[in-house]
Image (tube, rainbow, N blue to C red):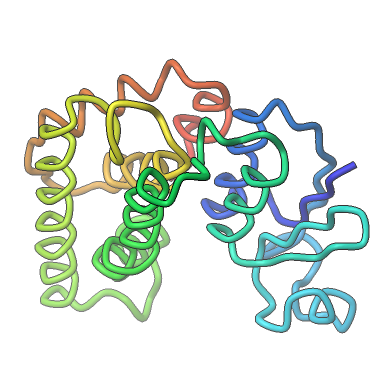
Length: 207
């Protein structure tokens, strides 16, 4: 059985858990990370030298990096409905997954650490404001894309990209500051509520 290493509160672990729900894929999960087993032990570092969760073990195969993991799972376990084999259909899915992992994540990092994690070293007011402005600009891009598709981030059908993007939207709504209203994003989040795993792994009270 697939084994997932990582605490269930981690946004990156939740990508994997939500994907398993979409694939109806059974798994076992072990708690690793802050507050649980340390990811800095030789045992864990032999699996992921970065010392980060999630890590999966699929029989003897070990893999880390959350977006890579969910691509692998969809490719291996009959997930063509989430991650198409056709390059023209797959490319937009990859595009929005990579945008989430790079541009969008960088924009909210400082504000999230300051306002949600209450990090003592992330309390500079100017840096928080800059992060919120950048985050808002990226959410405006997402709103425009969702307005154009009228449905999901990569097109009319739910895809693998909607899992990391959906989790990031949840983080947007969960972070306490005055939000610009983006109607297409709000409608999208409501649309996601119909998906398997959404309630357990996205809108579950965790940012």
